[in-house]
Image (cartoon, one colour):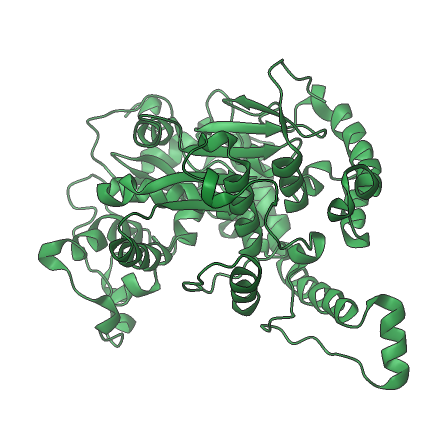
Length: 507
């Protein structure tokens, strides 16, 4: 079986489901040294699990440094996983303590009077760290969303883009905060909240960006395994669950087999997972011979839960359309959701899709996935817009070079640090670590700090950055790609962005 079968050339007639999982925990530092320095492929294989030996052997031999970087990055992130989580809880508490008591001086006064307001997680007043970076909650006043949403070209619709970015930012908050802002500030109908609370201190989310693991669906292409897991479409501890969720579970929802999964008993789920093969057999014929779907699988899957709710809403509102959006990991899930809808031939839903906007989104799959989705999303006019701010690190992950797997697709709306917009296929410095961009990245971080200190004077009070946002700018002097990922940059870009026709410099 030749190498191109897995990484280079797509074979339209290939109907096999393949996968590759990188497991940093399966090997030690000695194995990593032997693999990276001594080029011992057998040591590298310890970190890999695949659908067949050919996949594992080829990847270990031909993509050694990509695997090494992935292993090292994820081992480091894993090492700081718990401390990062605890730091997140502490930072959340301190920020809300200061906010609820009028800042540091106000906190001292309330302490003296014994009237300190203690933050309560999960309440309407408990704001996430992201919310403290950027406290804006009202939508852009420059255009009327109702009047422009269906008339303007999607890529030029500032009101719709602003709604998407603000919704993507709001997704970091708890249910009570979301309900309050949607109903009281946006004057919209609150439908439902799905408990997927996400924070910048989640080590698993950052580790996913450096993950090389993939699952290949013949018609769709190779898809990032971590993002499929985040959608509830499988679990790498038992790779056959991806097939069950993507293929077998869909059969459960066809008209002939349609059952309300919410009424099923969950008692059978305890034993069901043990009945599924923990390792797929080599060859396509019997690899999925045990196609057992746990009774509560559809209930626990974010994809199926959202799809079910969306169908009922669109059935109730015949003229309605929907938009999918997200920031960072949420952006990856935003484009994967319609991708799986197409795989499942949900054409009625796809016809009601107005557009997909993602902000700071990592790469989600290979070139075949891109071609497959562009044929469905951009048949008449572009519907998928990938917004990238300047030196944001996350859209440059996972790594992409001449032989690597992950490729972006869709229309890239790129904003430089002066909020100039340009449409392109790929953002400049697509892999971030290019030497020629190194000095400009740090010089740009200095400019962003100066800009942050003066935004309120230059653009008005709503753009003024608080002390916490400025602190992130200072951190950006060391790690510019991290500070550039902050939602503040994306809100400013959408609201202040101006289209630039001429070729922009890399700075």
